[in-house]
Structures are given as C-alpha cells and as structure tokens.
Amino acid sequence: MEKVSAETTVAALLKAHPGMMDWLIAYNPRFEALRNPLLRNTIGRVATLRQAAAVAGVEVADLVEAVRHKLGPGGGQDGLVDAGVAGGDASDGGAHDREALKGILKDLHAGIPMEEIQVRFNKLAMRLDGAQIARLEQELVQEGMPIQEIQRLCDVHARLLGGATPHPVGGTALHPVGGATPHPVGGATPHLPGEHGPAGSPHRVQGRPVLPPGHPGHTLMAENEALELAARQLEELAAGLGAPVSAVGQESVRKDISQALERLATIEIHYARKENQFFPYLERHGITAPPQVMWAVHDEIRGKLKGTRQAFSTGDAGKFVAELAACIHAIREMFFKEERIFIPLCLGQFTEEEWGEIRRGEGEIGYALVGEVPEWVPGVEKTRAGQVGQVGQVGQVGLDALDLRTGALTLPQVTMMLTHLPVDITFVDENDEVRFYSDTRERVFPRSPGVIGRKVQNCHPPKSLHVVNEILGAFRRGEKDVAEFWIQMQGKFLYIRYLAVRDPLGKYRGCLEVMQDVTRIRGLEGQRRLLQWEEGEGNG
Image 1 (cartoon, one colour):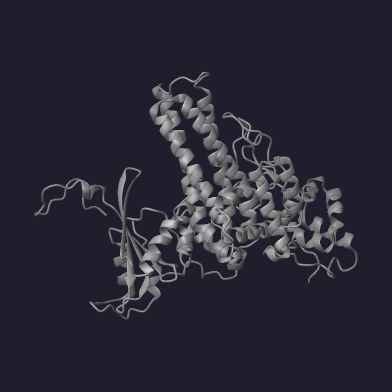
Image 2: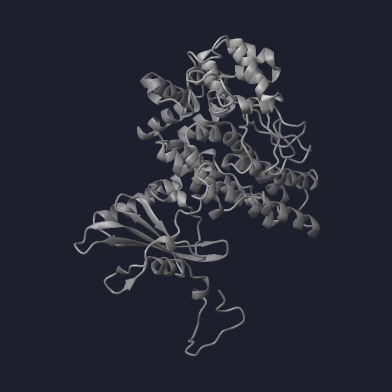
C-alpha cells in the first residue's frame, strides 16, 4: 500500500500502528475521542486524515507530514493495513458472540439491573463494529427472535454510545432548551467525532459523522436539527400552558401549536426517505434486521405523533402535554440512533456509486424542513462527467413497436400510458421482488427507484408482514386471485386491490397492487351524460 496520505482512514492507521492513538491525542487534544472503541469502529472506519484535520482545525498537510515523520522512513508505506469500510463479518464473533447477545436479551427479560447488562454489552461491543453487531442481530431474527426483542438490544447499544434518557417536556440533558440556531443544510460546521458543536447548539450529539453538504447522510442530520427546532418550539408552547395546565383554548395559542405540530409531522418524510432509500441498500448488503427494527420504531413514533395531535384536537391540555413529552422523547432517541449507529453503519457498507444512486432518488420522496438541498456528486462520478442523468431516459430507446397482443406500442408510449393512469400501480414478480411502480400524480404512498429489486416483505412495516405473506401465499398456491382493502387516511378514502398475475398456463407470475383515491367517486350521484366541466374540473 502507498504511504500515509490525506485519504488514509484513521482506522487503517491505528490498525497498522496502534501506538499512534496516544501520539494523535498528544498532537491535538481533540483526538481524545479515539479512545472510545465504538467510535473507532464506526466513524473511525470511514473518517480520513483529511476529515480529521478539518474538524481538529489543523492543516491536512501538516497532520499528514507529522504522521509520516512519526512513523519514520517510508512514512508508513510498509505494514499499513487497509481497514476498509465494509465492516467485519459476523462470523468473526462466531456462535459465542451470538449466544452472548441471546444471554443479554434473556437477562433483560429477567429484570437483571441495566448497569450489569450494560457492562456485558460494552465488553462485546469493544471487539465488534456496528456492522458485526447488526449481522449478529440479523442472525437472531433469522432464528426466530421477535423484532421487538432486537429493538431492546438496540436501546442498550444506544445507551452504550451515550444516548438520551427520559426527560420532561421543556428540555433534555442532550437537548437543553434555548441555544443557537442550527446550521442550515449546506452550511453545517464540521465537528470532530466525540466533540460537541457550538455551545447551546441544538442537536449536536457526540460522534456525529462529518459529511459534505448534499450527501444523503448529511441531509438526514440537517433534517434532525430542523425537526429539533420544531420540537423545542412545541415544548416552549406547552410550557406556556401553565401548571396545572389550562385548556388549549386561546385561538392564538392553538394556531401556534397547530403550526408547530405540522412542522414536526414532516418527520414522516424523513422516515419515508430512510425506508425507501436507505433500507433497500442495506438489504442488498445482507443487512435486513436493523431496517426492520428501525421501521418498527418509526411506526411507534408515528403512533405517538398521532396521539399527540388527537389530544390537541380535543383541547385536553394535560393529555396533550403528556403525549407530546413521550413523542418528542422518542423522536430524540431516534435522532441519536440515526447519527451514532444508523448513518455510520451505512457509511461502512455503501459504495460511492450507491450513495450517488440514493442521492438521485431522494427527490422522489422529498425533504423535511430543510428546503433546497445542495447538489452532491460522489467522487467516483466526477470522473464520469456527462453520464449522470442518462439512466432511465426512455427517449434513448429505439422506436420499434412492442407487440402487446391487442395492439402495438413503442416503449415511450407504454411509459406515457402508465404514468397517466388515474391509479397507483406496483408490480411484484413471482420471486416477491418489486419490479415496477407507476410514477404518477395519483401515487398515494412514497416510492423511489431504490425499491426496485427489493423484497416486497421489506417494503412493509413489520406489523403488517404476516398479511403480506398470507396474500402472496394464497396467490402462489392458486387459492385466491384478489385481495381488497379500503382505508381512510388524511381525508382520503383509498381503495386498494391486490391481483394475482398468471401466465396463459395459469402459473403464478407475480402480484399487481392497484391503489386509487375514490373519495370523489364515492360521492357521485345520479348521472352525467353530457359534457360538463365544473370550475377546476378537468385540469391537469
């Protein structure tokens, strides 16, 4: 390997030369965070000397030269081991580590003091990185352990990293009330892993990854800061209700709380982007349990947010304050898990090309409270200028007609037809993999290109997985051909049909989901036999 350079990772340097840790800390006290083994195995696996120099406030050339000088002749050229970013294999821990995790969960059930549990988990985590722990958790799920149990283990993991603990509405130890406005997306000040941001800065937790503006991981953290501001505003408004709390009755107060609640509710976009953009790529790397666990927590937070809004609508201030406290606490814990566990795990798995794909698909879902997100092109694509944006341009396909048995259409015509259907359709093949979704204005639930090739079971929250499998099983066995549902959501009446797709010989070839907003249709009466466009009707 070439000698130490600005692009050498901290992990590679310390793996080849463990004694360099003490030297780095002596060189700059801000490197003290390297003593934390969890940080070394997460952030340190992807952080380069260039990034470390930036957040430590030193010139990268000076740091690299000092490291080379310390290593002596060759500047570390001999013996420097590439620690990589892919994370270790769970087999490194083997069956012993898996049994250790099982024992921890068993003792959690038995009521063993958390302090004792934490010590045991700490010892395990010191020799395993985030990816290895994730794979061990996944093996436990594959052996039949419920997602809820793995979720408890994730809470222990978060506590190890210094996660938030319950605090009343009005502030937490991690997020005190007041302080500076966070840096907007595109202008975040980098901080060394393990270092707090500016004094009083909301949501600057220790060990946040340092990423460039526009990077999908950076955007998640920027959204967390904006959502934290919305949460603080709600806390301040709730505190103004008095003690004992009075009814939420004043019109001005109701308006302010309602607006703040709507801002906090945009967290749904944040979670939808994780579920549709990040989770599929983790699954492609064989990591399926952590996304399932995190999705379950998303649903819990959605439920808490719904309860908060319902309490507000009834005017019961006491219940509103209690629901709000539980909701914000859960949201803040997820902030922490994202920045200290989830994003580092993704950084250790995804390639630059994959990050680029995630970035290009983000616009399909949207963003929460951060406005326009800066452009970001991964380094691997900067040398392929002109290629970005060419994928998926149906106009590049030849205009030869496709024989569709009842007609012949060009591929562009087929594409236009599908995007103009007044329904939202998704096709899943016989292997339960998503192969197509219609990019139409009628789409009800978020979709993005990351879903293509994903197992449909992973596209649904864990609580509804048994229903998905029951439908597909009945279709595959030839017992049923249709499954219907109708639900009411956000003022809409949705009609959902699942249709078994079979070839001319009757063999099961997949499932077609057709979803339609039938709110207006259900209200139709009488007849309309003549052309009549009412105001606003028939517009594109």
